Length: 354
Image (tube, rainbow, N blue to C red; front, side, top):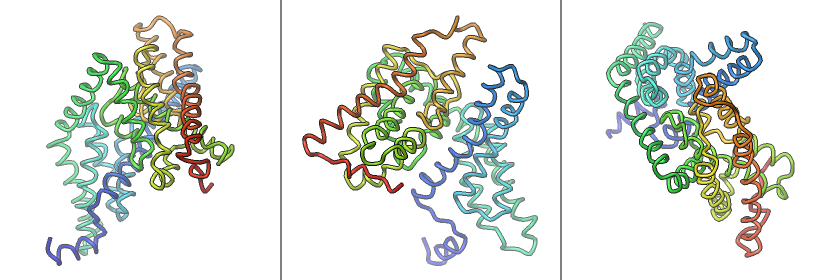
């Protein structure tokens, strides 16, 4: 890369790094998805169960703008100028609509590219108010028309392969999906966005949820002595990502929750046949705001309404509570206690600055 190009990119705040694209943008995309599709799903579920059409209508409106919400969130993470940021509304809508069930992945890739193109031309002409949005929207929508469908089909194919493999080998895939998605939840990337992009539902979605719950509830419980009630709530209903700094300093503290996820994942797939048939993003949310559990419940409701399920059974509820809360708490505490007795880490290694 020439020095002149480097200077231009620096001047335009176009920073081509994994940190910005794979972590900051993906995490922001998950927030955009949460603020549209996920909150919309919650409202819709309340409306369906209460018979209050107001909540159903609000949920429908919120869910319908998920593409735009994700694209703007990505633009915000990339520090886009206002005209570029607002233009991404149209880009996100086009990419999500043309990407089909794989819309989130299409939005992610296309919004990244069109945002950086928009930033490159921003304030380069005296007609900036016309040129910047025109270039951003034209490049983004053209790209969406050219590749969004293929991106969506590829994402769904990969997600379908994972789900097919989980149905075929619930033990092995239950372990792999649970551990991998759980790890991504704790890393500074978005497990929710990944699950949404791949359309990860069914048994694979249940295993993914198990892994996320193992991380969140596990860290909340095993660090209780160090962080108290505040830490319990922040990690158990917020995110285990809070422990990332401690994990970097002492990686061994991550093993108890990873081992737990390797246990609860196959229990979810083999014993409880736990399927996530709500929104795919719920598979990667764990106990954050109880979105994962609401996703399970909304899936049960939809199955009953369609006739695929006779009723919500006691086993469904038992499976949800065991996999989401009880087993992660007990198993992680027990494993962490063994590790601490061996002197591998102490409570202070789990201390958060809350």
